[in-house]
Image (cartoon, rainbow, N blue to C red; front, side, top):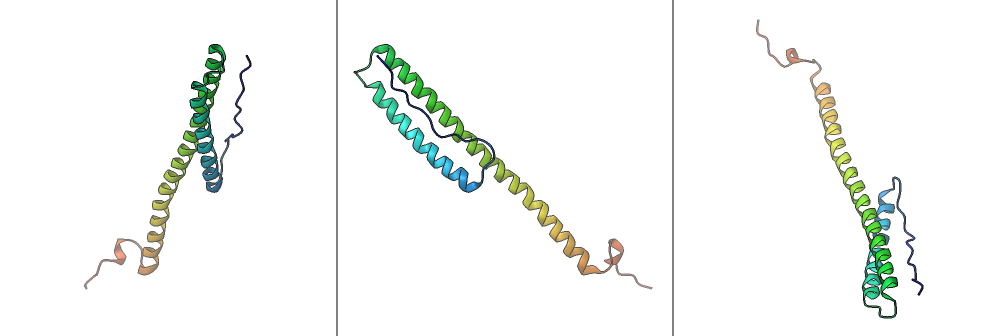
Length: 118
């Protein structure tokens, strides 16, 4: 008996834009559903020999694991981007508030704020 092979055509590598990663996620989720359905069908397929059935199931399980790993990589990338944005946001706020404080006083430092009486 010959085992029908199922090949994966979706590959994700390198940095991607948000739009691209969203479409990659959708494509990978569809691929995962298709592979899961194929696994269910293969497990109940009575036309294959026991050895061929076992090989097909192992192949499908390996492909499912690969797609899951790709999805996890995209999720980690999105989390890293969020963390990076959050860490950049407070830095820009402090520079903005620092520049407004120096422009309003005219005198810099503590001496510009203290009233002196003679």
